Length: 135
Image (cartoon, helix red, strand yellow):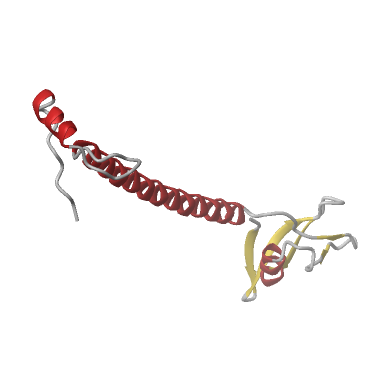
């Protein structure tokens, strides 16, 4: 940022010509406009007639762009987390359904129950407790 001077109530910026290296003062409002419009639309002339302009991004522009990218990444990750949670809940629900059918001795192919399989589970696998239907 250029040094600022006030002469007779008018603010001036101390700048340097990039072509010839001469130092001079320009009105602060012109310097501010040139800094804001870094697209080449504001030209400044030195006392020797060289024209120059500020180009490229400022640090504030770079930080703003980085912040926006990080916000987008955060939103994408939050969406991904929500999707993974839904998938997990769906898989857990399906697992409970399959377990309930297996413990109840329901054939996964024809949906029939078999009494002897139920008896086998009760007698040989007492640690397997039939799951109740969950709403």
